[in-house]
Length: 121
Length: 110
Image (cartoon, rainbow over all chains, first blue to last red):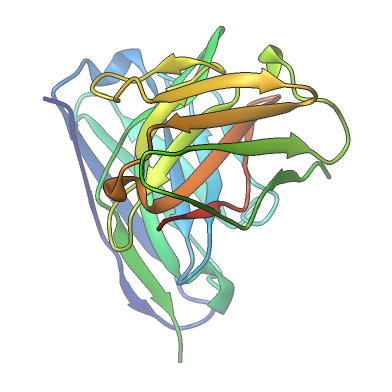
């Protein structure tokens, strides 16, 4: 059974930093791309960032480019999102997702339960 | 910047059929946009319904089907049930590693 368990969320002041983690199990983690998707309170889903299976390539939404860094440790089956210079508008539930990004598949196959990040003074 | 458009809300009667659509602000949707669909109920994580236009994910009932209708991607629910009342999101692959979600459709079954 595929399981994705996010952690690291919490309350942080504007301008602060936070690192999210996503522990994966139930599949060969090193064989798949992974992504982060967020959802602000009462709003829709927003793709944030993706990383290829080997970590060599990363992709970011314009809204987080230059502030967030996605990475992974395949030896620990764990995905990370380092978030710096946080803003109030980054307040959201952050989901990690198993990303099937190879033609003809480009979609999120499994989702974690999410971790809440609140940016407020 | 390309925007992915969805109806903000729709309603359907129990047992009825409803089609949700997903368009692009600057182009027609095709299979090479790899449209996918997700369902989310309040307080829960999204669940994947459809990938690559019309491929149902494991465990998804066959009353859910995906297609291209005209210049948009479509999700059709045939024989809607009360449990289908949810928010539905489409997503497109834009190339260069970028995904974009639509704003979501709130489906009411009444």
